[in-house]
Length: 301
Image 1 (cartoon, rainbow, N blue to C red):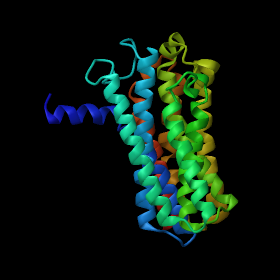
Image 2 (tube, helix red, strand yellow; image 1 turned 90 degrees about the horizontal axis):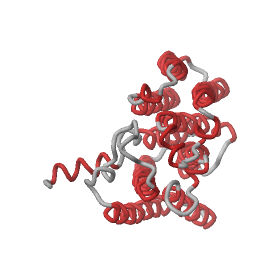
Image 3 (cartoon, rainbow, N blue to C red; image 1 turned 90 degrees about the vertical axis):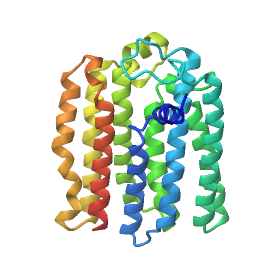
Image 4 (cartoon, helix red, strand yellow; image 1 turned 30 degrees about the horizontal axis):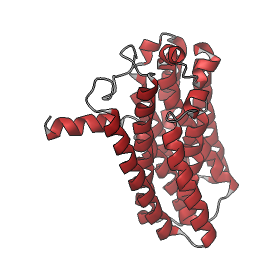
């Protein structure tokens, strides 16, 4: 196996289509810090690196856990994972998880050391960092992974919304105005929408494997309604923040994605066949990045 193919295998295992979610969350948190007059570029870059590593760790752990439990089979609608067709072994993936865990912890430690102002900050973010690593791994790994209990959506909302956005904001500003919870909520909801596309696509396979995602629990029809609700609530949350805090027309650039989100949502709602959703995971991740990016841009202008 040459170096190029080895890189390609591990790059695909990191699931690059989902990585814009990390960038989107940090963009929003840092834009809010700029809105508060406290933007710090070094903290932003360290927060982005840490968040990317945690997401890659979660993606590795997801493949590993599903492989161990036999959830990912050749019948899956989505692209086959490298571990499924033997390009990498379970042991190689386990070692990669350990390595990325160490990198994420180290990056997070440097981030907190650069940003903390009190021992309470050190303690709180140490605990949050450890919990984030544990949560990234136990999504599908372990005897009772919470991804198999329908709690993945809540985890994504917390991580890509409140922890990533508000954590990035707090480490620069060292306060948490209540109004900042609205854009954090919006960012988290758009990330949940990406997961929801994945779960709608894989509903039959997950059901057969005993992976009781939220979509397996509520059914495909309710899952499509839920998807529309995620998109609508995200835009409403951004709009509430803008109406309360942003006085100029150019602060509302995020609304430019509304037609794209409506088109995407209607497609999901009117296509109950899971196979039709195959190309929409990357599309939803791109829409989340675009919406969050335009919100961030409009906020700092």
